Image (spheres, helix red, strand yellow):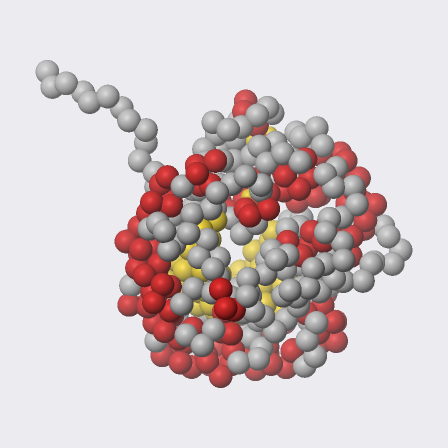
Length: 383
Ligand code: SF4
Ligand code: FES
């Protein structure tokens, strides 16, 4: 009989997606932006050659999708070259854009070098409200012209609408807008409270009744628009029963490269103190994926505490979001307080109810490079 080799640890599956945060520069100033409060400056951004190498390493590692993101990725002079590199490497490229400023002028060139998909942000359906939220006048007509050109080129278009107190009444209008612009997909994404959204939480938190109404609207529209428009719904964590599998589970599906080349397991991971993030200048993506301490820290289930440790959902949602656990519970290894099994869940829901009930929402603290927000953390955090 042949000897059976001892079983080693299961091979680590490759990441599916790479979020390439090409720059933090952006013409919009959305108060719900998930970028960090300390935004990277242009002078510190990776150069074109380094991005080409990173993309080649991603393809070799098994990555399938590259999300060209930011900030506004078309603010980079070399966005066409970077997109061309994706196509040459067989990577599916998704441009995540605001569609304003220079975006339209680069779109045909991006199409010519093989861009696969466009995800366009919309702040609201109604122009004045959209421009108030995004902090940029005359943005809406630019977005519509951009969307028109995307569909004229035959590129698949997804609209992404981040939903909050300031636009939740417009969910039906946003669905109509997606149809009118010829989008194939609409993301109705309730705000996730990281980065600037966390600072602006009291201004953004919608009332539970409005959230429920928005969910019913989406469910009805999904039926009505079957075959025409796919609608993805991201429900708000603070009112949820169970948390989402954030980033598909820590170190399981995604890698996030920041404008300066740090590689993170999720876009907000830098908020967790004590994690060491490896840099693309010092290590290959394969090394970072397989053995960097930050990716190892919360991969799998061994790090979990109760109630996650013995919960039968632990390999479904992977304990929720580490960054939210830190922000709300003060411990990144705690059960995400968005989970109804967390001892803090009741407090989080009460906080959401109290913030959404404020008669007048506080002013937005708009996202800005080099301008520290006036309030670093909302009152009552950690709860
Ligand atoms: Fe998920 Fe943990 Fe909640 Fe179970 S206790 S549902 S694993 S977050
Ligand atoms: Fe970091 Fe959810 S944003 S784990």
